[in-house]
Image (cartoon, rainbow, N blue to C red):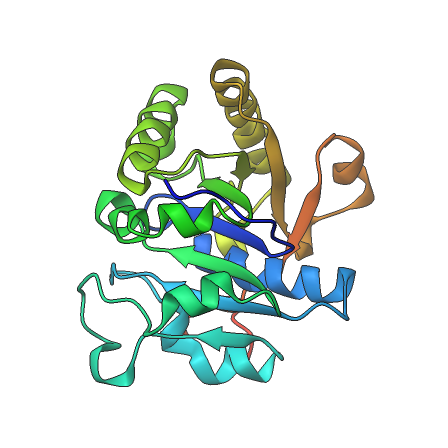
Length: 237
């Protein structure tokens, strides 16, 4: 690893299994950061090379209309399911003029893509978040989550610094599932020693009563990456 240099650049990397909700969270996280610090430029980079779910590039127009600066792979290779990353990515990673949020593809193959940038990532103020939805079959037990944690860290060659409890069923989300999922993530945190960085909750079920039960930072979620046939899907997206 190269010697780090003093950096004011913040980089947040979101990893997790397919369907865990990384892409939706990165959109909301960027909007949260823009509201929190409106004078600090921030960009969102799509490094998702795994296809089955909607990727950021599939909603480029809608995302940019939210005021988000989106960095995508080159157009010629944008829709290939291959480990292709945007040109001049090192420039984006080292540029001190803006912070960066990274949506990394699911599973081991997706995380392998980011491993090549390990050195330069550790030159920044880096946070690596593992997104966990305990209603998905690959993360519905503490044991499975720990296995995923170990595997994705190894393939990304990055240490996870925070856990994101993202248990929901999109427009069918309920308070009980949020709390049940959080209990499992708390067990993972206790075993791994990795703190819970965020609890993400669909804004429609985020009540004051629910807030009082959660002793962690909460990121309210608006659902932007929707299919037209989904119940509750916003008309504009």
